Amino acid sequence: MAKISLYRQIADTIRTKINSGDYKVGEVIPTEAELREEFSVSRVTIRQALKLLIENDELESVQGSGTYVKENKVNYNIYQQSSFKEKWTHLNVATHSDVIIFEITKPSILMAENLNINENDRIFYIKRVRYIEDNPITVEETWMPLALFPDLTYQVMQNSKYEYIEKTKGLTIDRSEQEIIPILPSAEVSALLGIDPSLPIIEKRTRSYLQDNTVFEYSRNYFKPSDYKFTLVAKRH
Image (cartoon, rainbow, N blue to C red; front, side):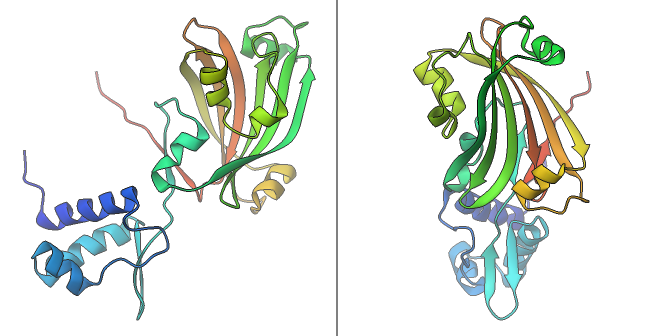
């Protein structure tokens, strides 16, 4: 295995400090001189490390001011089943949800199939805007069987749905099937996210299962590409 270059080791250390909150988003990091002293390396090595992080959009150099930590996109690991709040934990930022619609209705033929229920069964339909601080990140539409969650409330959906399912209901979430589709946003979605309706966004369709194979949710999320990146790992068999 090839030895990792010294400047990459330093870049990794700086990256760790960003992720741990030692270097906070929007704040200036130590100067080149301070970093040279901290790592006992040459100016060239420090500049290579900083150049790598700047080109990777993790840092931003401002002429005459210094080098700042950039607000990073959340790395949406599609193979990890996690909540909205959990995906942003590493940045130590406040999250909240604005519930626009919370109602009980009957499923369409397609939604009954998606949830593996009868057409006469009743379901919850919820629409939320998910925020990081005051920044709208995603619009989420969720359909859930009423029979599974008869005590689901508007207040629950203002917070963490997964926390309610796992801690309040005592159910075990197992997995999800997901589709990623580039689309043009509707007028409503573009207004809720504050984006140009002529620019494509990402729609994620998700069917989620409990440990006993029961479908507990079907959802559609509309993401701002400026705030998310999706990482996939493919292996050749």
